[in-house]
Image (cartoon, rainbow, N blue to C red; front, side, top):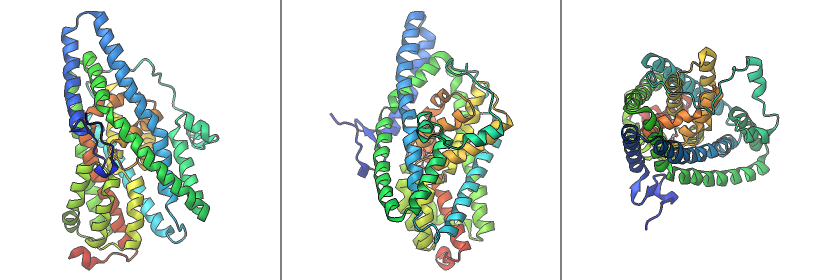
Length: 428
Ligand code: ASP
């Protein structure tokens, strides 16, 4: 029998029994919904219902869920250490790095803000009326001073044990900076972290292999309790994410190119299409990186000294599409459970989604893992991820296109401002 193919050379597309993970997750989505609806309509015995829904589905769903949560801390910490630690010559690259970092952060903040705005107009989670999970007890949000103090990881091990993501991210950034400053010793540690990153990515792929079963159980459980009415709000969620992705690409990116870099968005789009298709089919910023570097340097005229630095940095820390999904998902989950996170909550979402996108590795599905951190930060039930996971693969493909495009746009803008973009080559 053919087992799961986890060969890195096969790209990040996992195959199980000859089927792609995408196919299996979609089948699981359909089967989960159908099974849930059948149980809801035909299972009249309370004992059988509870055995299936509170027993089988809950156990299967929770195991998958815990496996995803298991990945959060190592993925975020190691990915950020690798990204920040690879800023080799901090002084020489300071200005370019500063500009790139500033633009990456700014575009992500704009992306998440558009996402929150449009979601509050469309209301993707309205009509769900889910009960807050019993394990979840909303607490009063802490004051601003407490939040600020809470950013400091007083005890790094406690930060990891508690999965306190903001503390872990701050620790990872400081660790990465210190590593770049430590020259030869830092380089040795970085190479270990790069290897560790590879191993952790394999761990992500292993967990993704149980996704079809997890999706089936989670959706089966939801639809057995919820019924058919859950489908419409899901398509509303899907549509909202897609609308914001298109808006962000069309307004923010093409606007940056036209009005800041004074470059033709049409030329960029034409030349970059190939990379976008690559991103869409692989669902991975990392896998798209070689194609992105090739097109940026050889077709868009970006000097190697900029592209070789800003593109890998972007593939590691710049995930506008992911932040958009997380913004819409947060509003969707809050509305689905009938919870109001208030203005303070929205500001917190903007901050944490920017940080989460920094901590999201450029491989398929990780944005959903770091979404848990955003939800946790605003006291929303992380169980809500189970509602959207069934449509995530398609959204992952689409948001990766935006993630990768953002890296290239910022790279062009930075290169142009440094006089390191060959406009003749760009327009050729
Ligand atoms: N697949 C995305 C990327 O590689 C990350 C994510 O949102 O899961 O850019």
